[in-house]
Amino acid sequence: MLKIITLITKFILVALTALLFGSCNHSINFNAIEGSGNITTEKRLVEGAFKSIEVNNAIDVVIEQSDKIEIIVQADDNLQKHITTKVENGTLVISCDKNSFINMKSKKVTVKMPVIDELEATSGSTITSKNTLKGENIRLNTSSAASIDLSIESDNITCDTSSGSTITINGKALQIKTTASSGSEINADKLLANEVSADVSSGASISVHPIVSLNAQASSGGNITYDIQPKSIQKNTSSGGSISQE
Image (cartoon, rainbow, N blue to C red; front, top):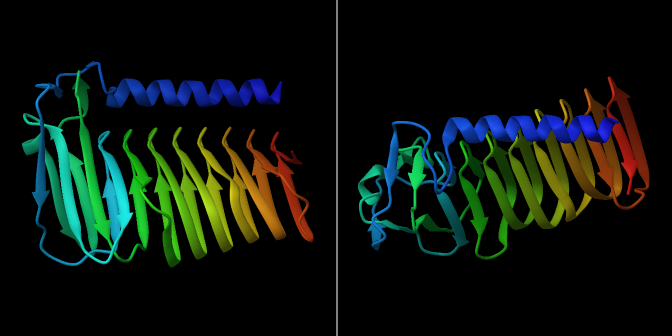
């Protein structure tokens, strides 16, 4: 019964978010744009250094860790002017003044950068990686049906998801802290981590691979699963939350 309630919660949240922000091929609001079918490529120049990325409104971002910095926008020619790329307080903000798309062939932004501190995806946008991202401390945030799917090697990783969004990561970490709420998901069972902290609530789910320790808290229909038994484990459940080994 708990799994059924959790699945229903996730379905409702994702459906509501989809209605708010539209999809790649259909429009339900006046702030929509129809793709021309003619894909063009632009190299963008920005003022200021950045170590973080924030993307919204269903734009697809591909990150490549590289010694050089480069921003390439590949989109239908009539969408290009609606996609903005600018640096604000050390963060590359990628946004679009349209939030619903009809028959759009492409809305992809490729970013090459040497150092990565934080990645944030909101409002149906996506972030993926072309290669394994490496760093000392990397923070990942998603909300409103957005998704992040990455390969990472880092000392410390922080993941925060909400509102039907998803983070999927693989790789290695010394420590990872995960927080998921409101029907969101964190899939980190392919990330080998020594120390894992997991906090889940409101029908969300987290899966992890803890080697040394796991500190897990689940409430309000949230679910935490771990695929191996760590050397030490602390569990705290309330209000229908569950913590279990797969």
